[in-house]
Length: 365
Image 1 (tube, rainbow, N blue to C red):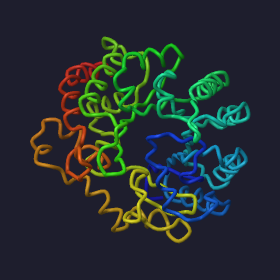
Image 2: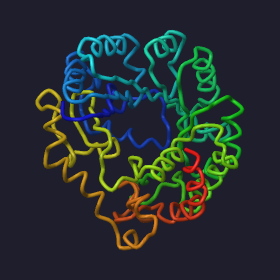
Image 3: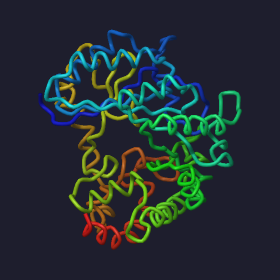
């Protein structure tokens, strides 16, 4: 074994999905492969599980898409069987599952609970904002259905969190979002900023603008901080708290890109699901070991480009908390590449606002 920890983002259905979310960043990946049936074979699955367990002590398998439930429950029952078969005595295995929830039923919920899967359920807020973009392929709303799946997971005591895409609509309502989720009994939340390009290469209209995102970060932080007594888990703030306390930055704000490798349905490997592109192809799981991938020159180049930041970053007092942000967000209003985040002003505003509160909290850890 060469790593203590390994996280894989596995996409057994590639970009195939049963919804038509308007802001989906992964749907264009359907054009990357010409296969009509983009489903992971039993052989690719077994090779992936085995090679992951050959390399690390603690392995997290993150099942994503597209929509991973399209593979059907028997596929994931085989996942568990293979993990048990190849697991060594000193290894720890975790499974995470990101879904839109549409196909979930009691059988899925029971499986998740019995096998300790952590489920991420995509919800953008109440129907007034969720149904703005998270719709079916024929334009119908989905909130009423997803809400029933949230309650299903709660009823079966499945460990789950809510993943919310912060867009141009719900970014204006951080307080109502927090209240909505808390009234539903949600204990774990995650908020991901939406930043995509339109057809002309410019920032898409549904993306959250820097001013709105900065306000969202500060206002949501107040709700989480709760006068020094956080009552729930919001991933972004919990990870920044760890950065303050121990100097361990979350993925998007590390000085180097060291995120989770992506394994596509056919075994192709990429360094990050934001960069599933021919330029960053790292090999195929059938032909290379994960150790070879992690030690390869293309992967080294991918990691190190994150360290190339603009002069404004070097001079920023919050450099060690940000490092120019995620490369995906290093574009300007015209969609051109830059060496600092589109949300640079958002983060500067937030860190200036929250700095003393984080420093106060770490005294209580």
